[in-house]
Image (cartoon, rainbow, N blue to C red; front, side, top):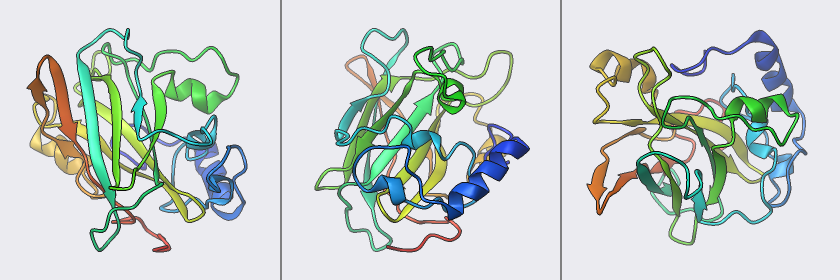
Length: 220
């Protein structure tokens, strides 16, 4: 299991191992098609490349404006190991809706995209390393005590593709100390955010440190 939140089927693990040694070509632009997967095993690491825009914006809608739920603005800075901002790094996110369901994506036959659902998107860091997702707060999986979360992957074009710690919410009653310890691997820096409500919108900040706690990261 590469995360607290979802087990990794054996076929996906096998596919991820293949992706680590083969060029990735199911995407457009930004040299991401030759970006190797690192930090194995990496569940669904091919999915961030499916439908990847040639020029992702720095501020992206992860959920449309009319998506039911409490609005959330998730921002952060992408920095290298020395703390310098990095431009042009692509952050891929996907999440549940307010009911805790990955809402169906019926416009594709790609099984990975259907698993991730329609609340998925890409943001590219700007000159100051900043990225933003406009979305809604996700719900816990129905009938479980699973903490609310947003899945994040990082694409450093031509360098490395990997998942990082999910965004978790400090005010979530399901985020017990035990659940936090289990979920927090330090991949890409701390994933737990402290949301604040500003003019009816939740705001949260999740910085990303490239390569931190990612096995096999090439440091490019």
